[in-house]
Image 1: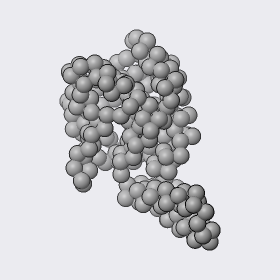
Image 2 (image 1 turned 90 degrees about the horizontal axis):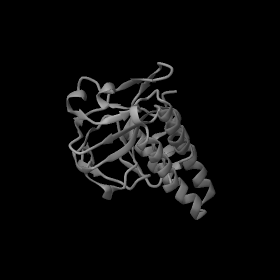
Image 3 (image 1 turned 60 degrees about the horizontal axis):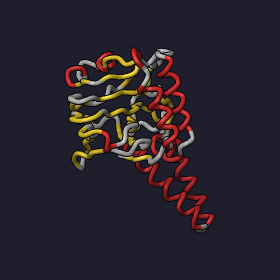
Image 4 (image 1 turned 45 degrees about the horizontal axis):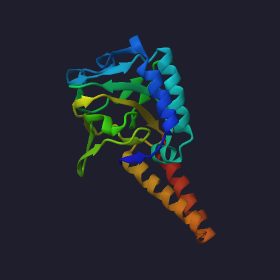
Length: 228
């Protein structure tokens, strides 16, 4: 399931993040420092040191926005959010086809975080760079995302995906992973569709008995499929 979240961050928030990132200096490091054996040979970018003060401030902004976003909550059903990370691709940089590692170690407490849902938050105006598309493969083929600054895309961490080489300009983005309450993408997708249908029915003031029944089914399925 691919889900776009429009305007997760408003223009003022994007500008503030960019001001922090664009002046981060030595906090930018080689992106391969966190790449596994599969990703390192095909990854050429830079990222912010996860332990740096600028990373902590930027993480706070993004995590706070995610905690309040109903689309993110409904689609990801988050249990654990990996602290958001930040990267940039200059000319000639890209990240070839790969699958994200199944488990990551939390950078502050060392706990294991299973990666169920991957997320990319775009922080550059798409007209400011050429190339740099996020391409995600699923059973229906390859999908490309190059969204406005402040928009996010969610996709299963099991997906084969890549960032195509940037040929002009600079692409800045935030990325993170979610350990979901529901491990399977198919089950999360059904719950997301059901939640959307319930919200539309609530707005239409449809039969309240039927709506209560649907809400009950939703929570019973969540209870059945939840890992917790």
